[in-house]
Amino acid sequence: MSKPTEKNLVQKTPGVCGGNARIRDTRIPVWTLVSFRKQGAANEELLRNHPRLNQLDLEAAWSYYAQYPEEIDQVIADEDD
Image (cartoon, rainbow, N blue to C red; front, side, top):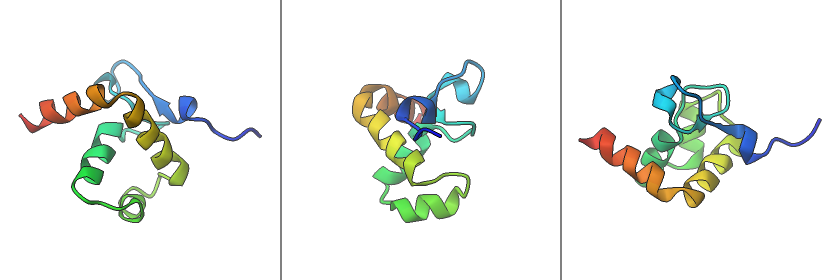
């Protein structure tokens, strides 16, 4: 079995999580994880609070955010309004 890649760990599906980027086969949006991280949550805390996630999922979320910061920051801003 091949190692999962960011491409299949982060998904965008119309009608699921508002079409926002989310972690594979979950309803956990990348923006939520990034928002918690910006508030000081450590990876260990995120994994404890989201038991369906693993370290590779978080790495994919951080990588996605590094590639698309404007997209994620805009969703966070919209959610804060």
